[in-house]
Image 1 (tube, rainbow, N blue to C red):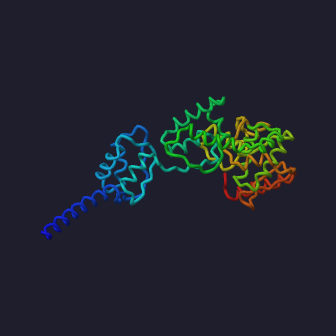
Image 2: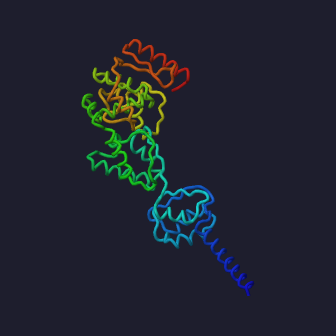
Image 3: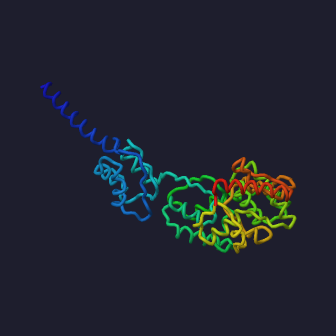
Length: 341
């Protein structure tokens, strides 16, 4: 009798263990075969989600059962989700239901205009570039600007994190908040002392950034030089403004490695060889260092600068027209020796 009871107990335990293991494997056993990202757009159907997930899991049926058991077939949130090798069905379902998506990194560089920037940024979002631009245009109009291009001053060069589902409104607010934080009472005081408008500061900062190649150690020197020229009523004569003027006309499709005399005649309010004064707006997205350089420039007497062929990426500065001719000749000879046209 005892032996029969023992056998029954063992059978019960075996059956319980079998179903218990099956339950555990379905809910908590490893089911993700490789790392990757799954995109779930707004308005997605559950079957679409299953198709997107299928390449990353070993057992689609077990995932389907857990998802339905937890009502994920009816309740889920759009997003970009990171699937980690070895993860289980429960963690995946909970992640998608809670909307715990992974952020994407966005590099905001020295884009010539906002539309160029959006073309790059929107590739890492759910929205297409046209929708993104149209919404930024609306934001600009609400703020009294002509279009999204007038929002350029709100952006700073850096790397930022956003969700794939970020809206243009959420995207812009991050930069607007950063812009407002940047303009402290101390910087506003320097702005007042400079005698420049906010738009002029950003326009000069963009020239400083382009001329310096983004290197902070020359920015204040370059800012001082251009402010000297501006105060003397001299044309700024900055090559990057000519390049920008041409790029605007060609929708940034022309690559200019060397500014020639024919380029200097390009008709554009941004061409500082053709026009006196500061351009009507920035020629690129700037970084914080370049704005600070304009607010706190070096007090120097320089009015000429020329690339230094002996120190790539840096410049020779002078207040002498004669010395500048010598410096420019040395640079032109170097360009010719490298066959840069």
